[in-house]
Image (cartoon, rainbow, N blue to C red):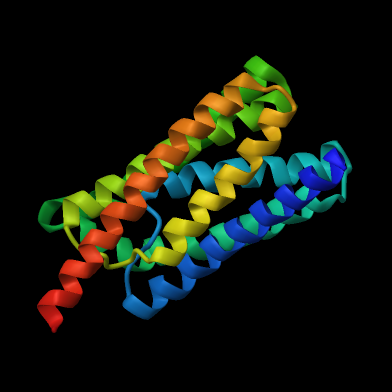
Length: 212
């Protein structure tokens, strides 16, 4: 029974994160903007790239997680395309010339951080710990962008809710396995995700009010 519950939670998490990435791509091209902040995107790109490679070529595992990581990595590449295509709007005037170097630097740093987790904790524990810490960073990045721009452009409730549920479900089964780190960081992430959802809802209501 416990194993079935864990399997269901893993499945829900996988579906929710897939929806997040697909919605980021759809909204990005539709609104001609990027949806995932650069630091969040870089950390995801590094995490999923490293662990997709690890699953397929080192662990030689073709399980559900390996397939999910590989699919997410491909979706990350498309999201990265939206960043390169529309993210330059963030860089005005003289700063435009730093767009590509800055992006490359952030991606390199993200890979270095992921490898540090593997070096210090091993690939299995490093995978878990880095995932939750970067999820906290992602939540803060989304809140920061919303606060900075004061607009819901490039941000949808689908992304916000699915990101929240996609992290909350593995937090539950991590807690069932007795992992205190996952429990605490999962709770922190959930708090920030709820703040983001409520904040986004407030911004969207204001936008609708002005349009009406």
